[in-house]
Amino acid sequence: MNYSRILRRRGAGFTLIELLVVIAIIAILASMILPALSRAKIKAQQVNDLNNLKQMSIAWMMYASDNRERLVLNNTQDTNSWIDGAIGSEQDATGSTNVNAVKLGKLYPYNPNVAIYQCPGANLGTKVSNYQKLARNYSMEGRMGSTELEYIYGTGMPYHTMASISRPSPAMAIVFIDESVNTIDDGVFATQAPPSISFQNYPTARHLNAAVFSFADGHVEPKKWRGLAKEGSLTTPLANTPTLLQDLRWIQQHVYP
Image (cartoon, rainbow, N blue to C red):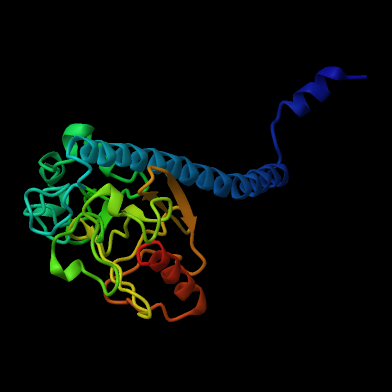
């Protein structure tokens, strides 16, 4: 047998058909693997998000402990709030990327780290921020520490002390929210009371149709949405499908009595 001839033939490389088959197999494997890798990346970002809100919750509770159980202020245009409201609007071209709004806030001394105010999954901002990363992706629920009349919602008066948080209970009462980049503005997350069917501010849906929340007892958790599948907008506030309405009602029951 002429082995040298066989070896020379094998050394000639792939035929065109064999090469196309290999490329097709690689493409099929890539189509199977890449979505799984993408989901794994988003889940890792959600874990980071949970850690961020946990750190912010600890700072929020430490502030109350140092101030006779009074909650940190949560007002718009207020330099004495948890963020500097005078320069902290994400809907303002100057304020949207201004990390000084975070650094000058009353919670910052309890964890001086700008990164914990930023969601790792929110890679880009909006047209207002020239698509630069926003200085902040989290807001505080409006009943927590507000002294502004516009945040006295129906039967839900603002909380001013830890002891006043009772309806809903601390385990259910939302404090921090990972907000949609399209509706985040001042430091306050506003929610209309039932029977309203309108979102005022939207939570994000960037974590595989989920958002991350912290609660007044200190725990944090993700919420998987039934209807929210993209970042909500101020121009589309209505919960006009049964699943969107379920999402809105979940938020409302974690804000109002």
